[in-house]
Each structure stands twice: as structure tokens, then as C-alpha cells.
Image 1 (cartoon, helix red, strand yellow):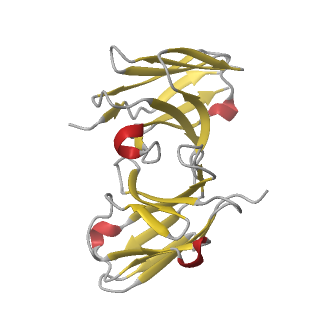
Image 2 (cartoon, rainbow over the protein chains, first blue to last red; image 1 turned 135 degrees about the horizontal axis):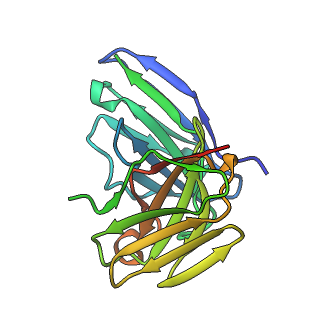
Image 3 (cartoon, rainbow over the protein chains, first blue to last red; image 1 turned 180 degrees about the horizontal axis):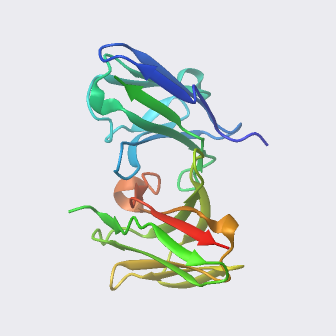
Length: 113
Length: 114
């Protein structure tokens, strides 16, 4: 069974540009989560999808971040415009049911210059 | 104050040593406690999952939860160089988080030396 995959593995952009991160969850997992780790800090929750619906987006930092999961399969996280403080590692995780084990992807390392 | 406190280390031990990793937390609503292991440039991987106070053992790993003290521990027996990684504690509550929103510690970097 393939794990959670994320693309790209690393992205370097300039302040003010737009970046889109993609996450493909494990097949059959209705629940998809985005987390972020900025330098020196803990991994923090961003949001949670159940199928295509946003269940909890309490961790989204501001309206420069837009997450979508059209069709309830893969998800994208767009940052527009990117700021320096957005640099970090963005993790995606998925689980079959609510409260089940969350399986994490390898992360996308975002560097904003 | 952070909801979950974890000493970042680094912690260096000789092969075969018993390792003790710990986290404290402030939110009494946390009911689910997890330990994740993360190798460099990889995503976190679930090691242990506990719900109630007490001990849970899985091979060389033992997870311990003391809800009265808001303190959790992970013990690794007979540590191996392959155990070298960052260990993250994570917690969630069912009421506000629906068991889904994980709150992490900063992680402890462990190195097991030959």
C-alpha cells in the first residue's frame, strides 16, 4: 500500500510569489490533515478535511493560505503571496476514520527568500 | 506557555542503554497520547498510542502516561544505532479536537552511539 505522498519535496520561492503544495493521501482515507513546522518550533495543525469538506481550519494562519480538496482525493495548499515567515516544512497526513492513526507524508520544505 | 513541553535534546547514549524521553502538558482535556519517530528528511511515523493512564509495552518500547501529573514518557530498552532519530510526543482530545487535531511537542533528538 502506497503511503502519503507530497509534491514537491522542496520549493524555493521569493517573497510575494505563489506556491502550491500537493498531497496525495493513502487510498481510501477520507480524512486529510495539513500541519506545518517552522524553524525551531513544534509541528502545528493547520486544517482537517473529511472527504472534500473542511472539518476544522482553526490552525490556518491567515487568508494567504488556501487549502482545497476537490473530489475528496488529493489536496492542495496554496500560499499567495508568500512571506518570509511561511518558510518551514509542510506535512500532510491521512487517516481512514476520525480519530484513527494519522499517517504522515515526507513533507514539503518551503523556503521563502 | 506551550500546551506541550518537550526537551529538544540532543540526547546521546551508548548502544544498549535505556533511554527515557518525556513530555509534560497543560491541557487536562488531552485523552490520547502518541509517540512519533522521525528520521531526517522523513515524515513522523507512529510508534506508540495510549489512551489511559498506565503503561503500554511494544517490544523494546514502553509508553507511560500519568494523567494526574500531566506527564508522559517513552522508554527504549537496549537502544540501537537505528533508534537514532527525533522522537515527538503528540496529544489530542476528543471534545474540541474530535481526536483529529494533534498537538505536538518540539521533539527530542536522540543519537545512539556504537
